[in-house]
Length: 178
Image (tube, rainbow, N blue to C red; front, side):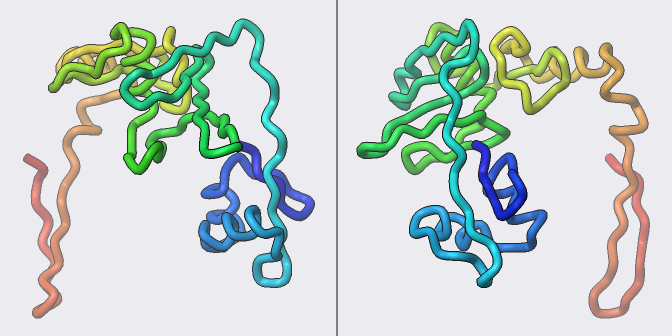
């Protein structure tokens, strides 16, 4: 969702909060009631664009929301319709969900939950892209091997030392990773 701030446009409430060092709740309140934050910033939602070219919406039966093949979702909250791009985790109907898993279950798994122990692999390693053609359901070992084969996971990335500090004595010790 695009959030319009004074002279600036942000990709999300979290993005605006991080860059302006303002609480997300204060930005949400500003959007709801039109009041400025810290007497300096006033926020409003930019209108959502119409369907993207070749966009197809399918209902996710488990949650009763619509998910598109362009990696967007929409759900109804009273008279309002929310449309947004899923990034990482989304809060829907009181629950938190990893959006790429919702896209995968809706488009790749015949609208059924992903089996326990299975993962969703981002084939292009672009974790913000939730288009079904960029995802696949696989085992954890297949996911790790694919990331390694694509050059995104190197051996050195799995071996990181751990540093521990004793809070009473101030002693610092380094340990090899397991």
